[in-house]
Image (cartoon, rainbow, N blue to C red; front, side):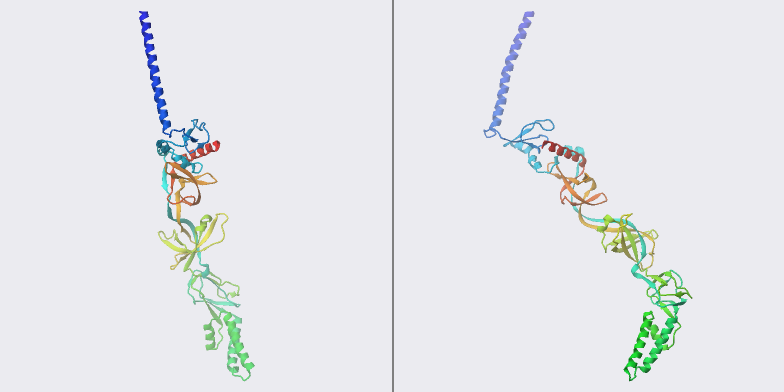
Length: 434
């Protein structure tokens, strides 16, 4: 029995060995045939290797065979390839022209890391700058009332601060011994000119006329009006006191003229403010000043008049910067026909800054390395190029791009941190290899 089992096993082993030898020869023949056919597709000549490349990063080329950074063998690029191989490596020469750090990411991987993109476009940009300001009088419409001769206030017609006066309205009367003496001199000169003006002696006639002119001019230099001098001519009587009138319309904001008070030319008797227009000095941060221009409109709201907006114009930008707040004062002029706006009020001011048409990108699209800022520009085939840009103003989640991008290009707005990580890794590997 045992002898029969041994014979059977030997017979099976011999059959298996014969089949294996026969099949092996056929498989070898098949591979040799395919290899020969593959060689024939290359025009019957041995293929020429142009360079070796990393299969995972086709844009990295090498002059000799070896290992890629990930440990895989470098793949030869032959002078002639079949159409399928050529289609697979079309992106390699294109990426070779891209800046360092350019990466190619498959669509499924882009979806996995949450890549979102946006087309760059020029947009009209108007920004509102909100600030605070304080109301003040229009300095070009302030009138200081003085006398030009020593004397005494006799009557004060305007006798309290805050009183509204009209131009030409009487303010006070003044008694001045010097003024009375000059009036008398004027009347004497007038009579002399009348009596001696026809004298046959030219010197006498001219002297009388000269004295009349000089006394009249002295009265005018003391702010005695032509009407008052005319009245003096008509009556021929010296007036003990003379009345002084308001030179402008406005509110009395300061007063030093009181009855029976001695006054001198250096005293500021009244300060009259024309409040038909009002100034507002608003504080603008120094980095915003280049975009503020004289003539721009501005809106103002007051807490005292809820829901009401006043519109004015910028008339002046002050030349200095506050060293603490780093702001520049901007003067805005507002009409004030009903005198609702009062000096020393505080206001909320809104300036509209027009930047014109600018390229805007989301702030999250910009990568900041400290010494430079860049975005990832999207190319066909899932290629992402790091592009350095020059940033302008930041506002409401957007950044103005001054240079580095053109309208119509597509950039990454989300998922760029992961793209940046791969870009940095690739740049580091490229530097080590070369």
